[in-house]
Image 1 (cartoon, rainbow, N blue to C red):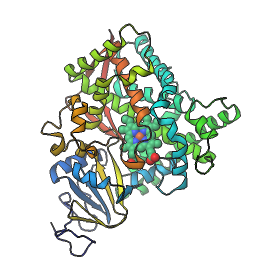
Image 2 (cartoon, protein in one colour):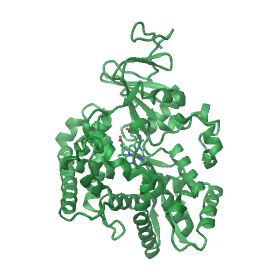
Image 3 (tube, protein in one colour):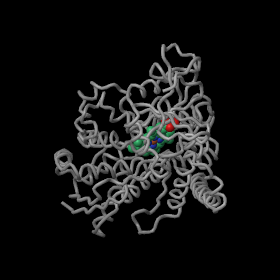
Length: 469
Ligand code: HEM
């Protein structure tokens, strides 16, 4: 590895560049071996091969990947690092602009929207969403009972989480369980996210290709369709407001920032709605799909989780809000699932000033690093030699207490961590517990799990048969 002299304000005795992938090409950089279809899975493999850090350079762009718990702890330090709106997030901005997920730290609308919306995501607020969430789960079960047969696991879970955020967030029904047809909004969103995923990888010539083939125009049409639908939802609500706020949209329209007294402007309300739809459904739906897959291939764990649900829900007509938090085994299943398959595969950070990472890698102010969660979540120094195995008891309180906090970050870090974490847990626990309680599940899949990437990890090709118990 080349030694760097005077490249940073390093006080370290020995500094060096992080390793890079094999076959670096002059000028172009590390383009060979890029996987434009499954980039994050390739990145996790590179980290396993090259160590807890490596750097890829493409046409002068430099991106450093970190996949070890100790380095991640450094990068999570808010005194030195902040969230970076890196290329994939920049490519989302034509859809969601300065919505919470893609806003730069210093954009005024981030602080305003965070202050207005944070109260809607506390554990206490989950009580108000509980019945709506339960209603969606019931609808899914009714649809399964009415039309028995094989189901596509990921598609079913996507319907569930999309309906949940649509109804809890904005009182909007996509009608996912009504017919086999996908709502045009869902089609447009899926196509737009596919485009963003591809644009997020700096493949030379991609932009020109998309322009020439008309794909860029199609993307614009998808975005316009989404804007129209959401603007209509907002206009309807404005013309017929609820008496007492009951969803995120009510809150956004009726509440002022407690610090400044300002409200969100109409365009920002649209940005936030689209943000919640984008950030708040695929992550939870894929986590549920992975959990079902992992349970079906670990029958002992499945029975343990089902036993807990059966004991708690014996003779209870309907699931109460309080019971959800008591499902500790089900929660551990989800925690362990998100360890192995963090459905948001990582997050970007940028250095606030020149620094040195790991005592030897100089980083300049503004330089970006991606924390690759699969690497961090399976670092053997923290998780042990069985780090790749599915063992939910790793999340028993005594084991959690014995681990450094930065070794597990499926919801990101610092002030820009996921605002929807409690929402996600409530809906996922409720859904998984209900499925375990009502059905026996058989999942047929190929011996190797096929995981698609569309900003998130999504298992594909999993077919499930459910049998009423
Ligand atoms: C298993 C489910 C989920 C996972 C794994 C997840 C993961 C994450 C991660 C890693 C971040 C930080 C991204 C970054 O630093 O760039 C994030 C941010 C965010 N998430 Fe989630 N998320 C989940 C569910 C949800 C849900 C259900 C919602 C909404 C209802 C939501 C809304 C958001 C928003 C708005 C942000 C941006 C927060 C900010 O920067 O202020 N997420 N999420």
